[in-house]
Amino acid sequence: MLYEQKFLFSLLLTLIVEIPIAVFLVRYLYKYKEIKTSKIVFVGLIASTLTLPYFWFILPAYIVSRSLYIFIGEILIIFIEATIYSQFF
Image 1 (cartoon, one colour):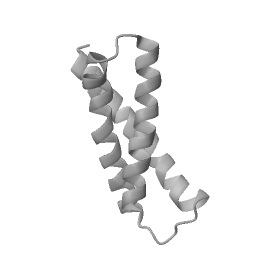
Image 2 (spheres, helix red, strand yellow):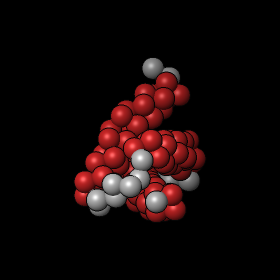
Image 3 (cartoon, rainbow, N blue to C red):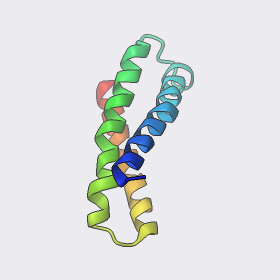
C-alpha cells in the first residue's frame, strides 16, 4: 500500500473515531446541548483534516526519531485541535 493510501485510510479512521467522541464530549460531558450536531461534526472534520497532513507529511521531515516524532506530533495535535474546538465553540 502506498504511503498516500495509508494516509487516506488513517484520515478516514481518524474521522470515524474522533467525530463520535467529539459529539459525545460536547453533548454529554460538557453539556452543551445548544450546539448543533452538524456543527460539532463540521468542526471535527476541520480539526482532523487540518492537523493530520502535518503529522504525516511535514513533521517527519524535521524529527528523525520515531518515538520523539509520535510524542511531539500527538502533543501538538492535541493543542492545535483543542484550539480549533475552542474557537468554534
